[in-house]
Length: 71
Image (tube, rainbow, N blue to C red):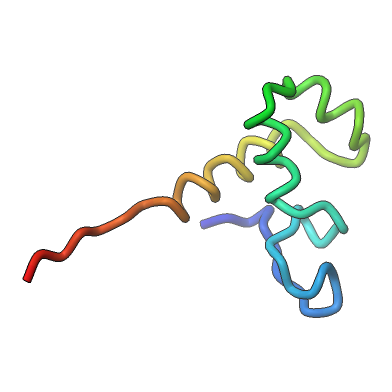
């Protein structure tokens, strides 16, 4: 489902990262939240691809899906 998001206990203590690199998804999402453009992020992290940023946002959106169960 998220082929660019990886988890490895030896990289960033197992946090969700981009393709096994030391670039956590949270860093990308935080930059977008602070109005960085894709181009600015790609310039700051030359190893990233546009698809990495897109999938980081998709993953963050997936994490925020909530189900309210009323008893």
